[in-house]
Image (cartoon, rainbow, N blue to C red; front, side, top):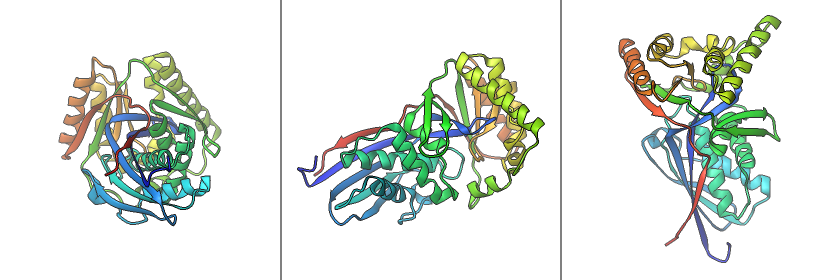
Length: 321
């Protein structure tokens, strides 16, 4: 590949919702309404990594400096594989809403790692892409987090078998479930991810642990076996959402009205303020209408999108001029 002066690769990574109620930090799903694209030019040089262009509907609210997660992610990749003597120029098309709980930083990082890795001739599997992309999340969250990055890298619904490197991930596509993603149009909370983690309880009693384990077991069983009653029960978290719900606009009414529309339930998407509702194909349109009604009654504008499960990160080699 390095017989030519410059290699150009584009990658697309989709948005994701993590936690899914009782699945805090261990479950996430890739969703198709939003995606980020990264275009990487790799050429011989002195090891410099630069972001040269940012565009897209949310490009004006992300950093254009080395503090952008795509730069950090590519530097981590080069360090991990001992890559030197190359310069990397990165263009980011930002299509995932920022600070909404939709895995925007993870999608950017995963797309950057996948594009740069392919351009450098590295044979990266989804686990490696997710591991490097999740490590880059420390830039915005304070610590590495691998659930969103894994969903964007693998696609489908992912289960974290190990959340510490070396991570282990399983991905599958549950049948019969459809989604509504709803994002209120509110100003992002500065340092939101850190704040939303700081409000979580530092410990729980044994009774709560057992109840939470029961909910997670029910959620997984429902997703794997298509048992909608079990899935609905598993969406009711008893640890994380009670601590976070007061920071999520229209939380209670969205949960109430989504069920009026026929949904199985609604949960905070990641750290919010977006919410994710799970429903059936037959109830999808009605569910979306009821969620729109909820935000209207709360006096909020919101972007409400019907969603399906997205594939993993995709890459293309492009011609250079």
